[in-house]
Image (cartoon, rainbow, N blue to C red):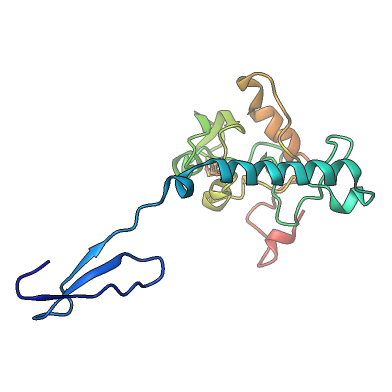
Length: 206
Ligand code: SF4
Ligand code: SF4
């Protein structure tokens, strides 16, 4: 409480602190008492019981509902699968040149921009006078990838895409989740990026 006489003001503003008194000189100077929860209010038992109730509700609904395909919260994967949204990208793929060579020029833009540091590239020199480098090693750790798509955006030559629609497979060992250059090119073999692009509709070219 500040100086000056104070008068009692036990007005209660809902759940806020209780105002015990207000200064006569400055009504903005007040003595308040912060409300503490009672032992009953701070107990976790009620919240626990409420959570168990939700779990029980889902259990009963999933077990006895006749509208299984539209109503249940869980599905019997892999026999049943959710339909992925249209914007689902899927695994990466590396594109080819017209002559079948890997389109990547090992410029290192994608590993630089990757926030998960999951792209590993070892550049090597090419014999092609027009292209300086190619990736001797190109690996993506799909377990670390956060599917942000920045690598695709950063690539200056449309060498990497994320449009396969293929979900990363489940693995037992971490190293099994690493996509090697050969695997990435295998997925990229479905299409060849057009050398130099073909006008504004280049994204539509398969
Ligand atoms: S999608 Fe994002 S996290 Fe995954 S490899 Fe590309 S930049 Fe890295
Ligand atoms: S940004 Fe493109 S060209 Fe550069 S290293 Fe990555 S995939 Fe290769």
